[in-house]
Amino acid sequence: MKLKVNAIRLEASHAAYRWEQTMGTVLEVDVEASCPRRPTADRLSQVVTVEDIVNAVHRVSAKKTYTLMESLAYDILDSVWKSHRRKLDELLVRVRKIRPKSDRRIAGYEVEVKKN
Image 1 (cartoon, helix red, strand yellow):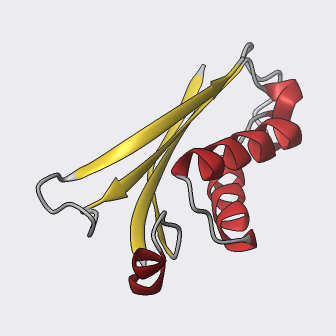
Image 2: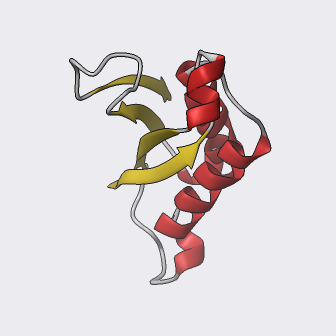
C-alpha cells in the first residue's frame, strides 16, 4: 500500500540567497509512504495518516531557515521515518520550489530523497 500526499504548501524563508530569504519562497512538498502490510484493523492507529505527514512537514519547516532544499527534504524524511518506521517499508520526500525568483525562465525545480 502506498500513501501519496501531494503539494503540501510552505511559504517560508528557505532559500540559498539572503535576498531570496527576505522576499520569501513558495515550496511544495510531496511525500510517498509505502507500507509493507495491510492494516489488521480499520483504525487510524494502524497506518501513517495524511495528518501525520502534513504536521511533520510543517513542524520541520518551522524549526529553522534552510539554505538547501536537500537539507529540508532529508530532515522531513528523517522525522517521518523516526515516528513511523514500524509502519513503513519505504519513504520518499520531494521538495519543489515554485516560480523561483532567482530564475523566472523556469516554472520550478525539485529535489527528491528516499529511504528504505
